[in-house]
Length: 283
Image (cartoon, rainbow, N blue to C red; front, side, top):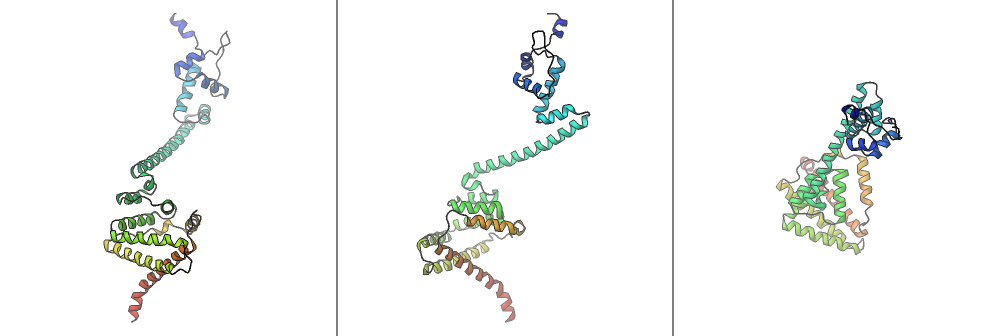
């Protein structure tokens, strides 16, 4: 074939597909939606692609590969000046940057799950690290749900503080033994009456145990940081309490009464400690 004959012969759709690595089906679709004008046909009735149509297909292919939607490609193709195309590319770049940030966060979450396992890897990194280093896995379904709620929606600092307390108790056999004993006594209250004397006994013993843990933590300078109260608003507290109340496994009546009494005793101790300096000043 002569050079002039080669230049003058248009390409078939199959040849164009082979040349630019775009399927014939995709090329036909671009024609159907008017993104690329359909070329004239040869004597046999087949599409005859010349340089103009081929370059337009290449342009669309490159723009789409860059991440522009077909709608945006059409806008760019119909633009009367280069600024419109630049604006579309700028918007695309912003979207890609947002996707990159999302992917980084997803990869960080996957890395944390791989490092700490599903039991602890769902918590914020600081809490997961504390639990992992102490060899503690989230104990029980309800315990994990509670920790996740605190870490995610209420106050991550409180979740971290709880994890540190768990680690602190885990490292001290006498505190750990007392925690396990009280946990077993609380479970035994599931079948008790509300007026059972064990309810009051557990509440007082639990308050005394927590006071002992607090004193030991203070001496060891554990959990001395102030939590950021600004992170919690009234709406979050209300929704968090509602979420806690929706737990499938609710405590028995005696257990609820025991917890109420424990909170009352703990609050009374707090008020007593807060009032002591003032009372001494009046003496």
